Length: 443
Image 1 (cartoon, helix red, strand yellow):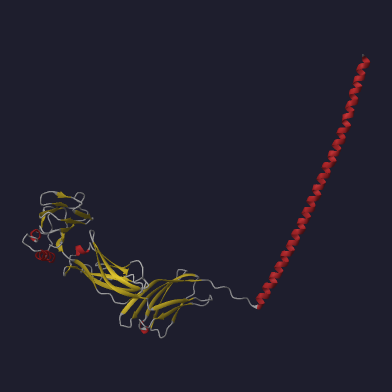
Image 2 (image 1 turned 60 degrees about the vertical axis):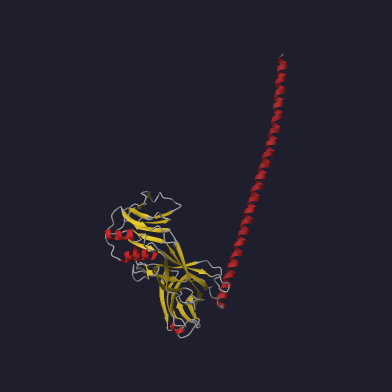
């Protein structure tokens, strides 16, 4: 028997519990079991489950089963009781056979080769749970236009299928993430050869953004094709806590946006800048072009503009010259392709830097005045230089005179001191000799 992935979204009411216990009887085929499970999904399942002892039966031919139990908020993970009476907990189970994912609100348990017979789930299981057998889950979205345009934004809807039927169990859809990646085909004939995958959208069924109604089974994705022009595969990634599936569509070509924008910067302070708009008439009807723009100026001011019913191209839009610096321009483009397809695109990173223009050339009178002022400045500098030299010369002279006076004074003092010492030494000698003679006469 082919591999069967079963998804049991808890179990409800006494009558519903009886149905769950018996939807995979030994005498049932795979197709009959699926039909019974789908009938449970579509039926009225509003009664509250008992806290424990809820049973369900696994057929002996099931090679793999996935159990999904939604619990009351904040409750502990469920406990699985096998047909032989042994128990599995979220932290204790045979890892080679079981994969167990626990979330604050639900448990997902995948079992390989489960033991046939009646099983039980103990825990505070949510009263809105339903039982669902999933045999061939897939996602299908509306086909993408081909070609697409760079920076194009478009709304795409899709549905989640179980076999040939749309999955209508809202709680199950809440566990699914649907992301869209554009993956390069690596065709060397296109500019996106070797480009990295780019995430362009996420499908949601929450009634927010471009999704019209929450929980209606229709997933809505809003694409923003900020990718390189070239050939891409649209890759839809469906992720649950336990497994991931990928669906590829395409290839599709992304052409350069057939509307071109350039900035003509003003060379004078009193003149405005120009936003030049051009179109490629091979791709779009030029008369259908409508543009909503918003300019953020360096001084913090924001101004909006709208362009429509353009008679000729290139068409210039004035952007006020308010301040020097970086200008950010957001552009919403609406047009009709030559094939009649309406499309819209958004550019939110278009920018330019306005630099201060150089000062104007001076007139002949201004040049003569500048020359006269320069001449006077040079004369003043020369005068200051002469005065500085004179002051320096005078200072040098004073220093020389003072040094000479000091040297002369030191020389005179030294001469006087030498003569003084020379006179003092003989007098002392004569006095000593007279004393000696007096002493000898007395004797």
